[in-house]
Each structure stands twice: as structure tokens, then as C-alpha cells.
Image (cartoon, rainbow, N blue to C red; front, side, top):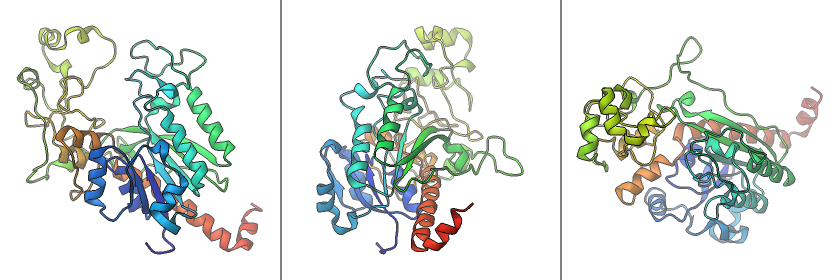
Length: 380
């Protein structure tokens, strides 16, 4: 790594979508931290020279990082990662910060910010983290993040407080991947902080839903997967029962496009549930932007059926929609590969955020080297 290149340490690396985006933005990875076997194998396959901490992040310390990375661990530019989000998803049990398996990992990220003291940090998660509570409480089914008690958002308040106590400025923003050239309408929240107290900002969108004079329109599925060519990646299968209904659904449709009696037959009790349930018996369309790529495209409620073929989209097609390069290999069993792709940050979205952070860091570095310019700028 050139001595003047920006560096980053990756936590909860997974399939490395966030990492690849940061690499595109000019950052060089120093270390990946991950304990999922399929993810570790994926990192080793694609980045064989990259040091890996293969263990529980709760046990990761500055001294271990120093042992793995060496002197390059001094004054790291960026700490990045997306702590597991099942605790905060509005579709899950919403156990928040009290979840023994997942919740505390957000605070482990904050602990490592304190230990490593990077110039900046970048943390990604689902929108549900904004309304999650520090303490678990039972919520009604499908509450959709509505404010229901005084604990609403207590996890966010605690996180922001801890970052500020460490001396970092911090801000967050919900971003839609489709606004940054990803052929997928996927919303996630990003937290950015700076050690020098600079006010974090976020990149302006490069695309819009409708398009126009200023921005091109959102990219469509067809642009991503029409030319996949020979696809040898893993592809799940629909059961015969699922195929019975999916064969009746047109491209871009779902269960609502079935005859009413077939809707009731195929949906069962879910037919009477509230909400759009748009994932049931869903068939994609080449002419539309993809919905969020999930981890089980063969399930009835999260179906991602190919636009013209009666099958789920393959691992490679999912990866294309997530803007992974074609030479990126996912390891593990088929279900594990889908999980790595579905849980990843879209590469182009990560690159947009990464470039914005890189510009801020390089600008700050330039001002540090030219104090007279910093003093002049402070007058305005």
C-alpha cells in the first residue's frame, strides 16, 4: 500500500460489498474482521493477502489489530462495518440493544472506534435501528416502526451520545441505493463521524426515480442481468406448489395479479393480513428497478422470480443487482452465498459514500499541512 493512500479496517465484513465500494473510492483495506465461515472463505478466496481476524468481534482489541496489521495500524483513516441488523429490522422481533446475539455488536463497533481512534468511521444498518430501543419490549406484529412508547429511538440516542462522548462529530442519513446507480430500491441508514469534529455530510444523488434534465432515471433490472451469459452460479428452486402460482404472475406482478379465489387459496391466512405483502408470488421485470435483494429469493413471501423464467434469480444475478463485479466469487453452500449477497451493501452505494468521506479526509489533511490556509478559511 502506498504510504499516502487512505486506509480502512473492516468489521463485520460479510461478502465485502461495503469493502469493495471503499476500495473503488480509493481506500486500501488493512484488515477484515469476520467469523462466519462462508464469509471468511469468500474473503480468503478474493483477497488472499488481506489479514483476517477470524473470531468474535467482542474479543477484538487494538493489540490484536496491531499484531495482525503491524505499524500500518497507527492512525487508521477509516473504521467501517455493518453490525448484524436482525435485532433492529421492523420485520423481526425487535429485540433492540438487549439482544444477546446481535444488539450489543453496535456498541462493540463504538468500543473499537474508541480503541482504534480512526480519523473517521462509517457504520451501515437497516432503517429500523433509528426506532429501536436499548431495552427489549414486546411490540405488536408488523408495527412498521411507529412510535408506540417512550423507548422508541432510545438505541439511536444512546449511540449518538456515546460517539459524542468519544469526541467524534456524527451524523446519519437514510439512503436509497437506486439514487446512486444501483438497479435496486434498497434503503439503508449510514452513520458517519469524524475525529476532528468536522460536520459529516453525504453525497448528493446521481439518479432519480423519474429521471429528467439533472439526473438519469433509476437503473432497471434488465441493464444488470440481461447479458449475464453463461451463469454457473448457484440457483435455488421453487417448489411445485409455488410454481403453480408463479406461472400465473406476469412480469412485474405479484399475488394481487392472481384471480381472487387463487389469491385466497395461495395466501392462506396471509390474505387477510394488513400491509402490501408485495413479496408474495413476486415476479421481477426487466423494465423495473429491483426491490431489495433479500437472502431467500425462493420463499413465497420474499420471492424474486426471474422476469421470463420460472425460477428464482441466481446468486450471480443477485450479485449483479448488488453491483458486485463478475469476478467476485462467493463461497459456501448455495443458501450461504445468497445470504452473503443479500446482506451486503451495494458496491456502488458504498463507493459513493466512500468517495465523499475520502474527499473530506483529504481536504482536512491538506488544511493540516497548510495551517495558514486553514486560518484564512476560518474567517468565513
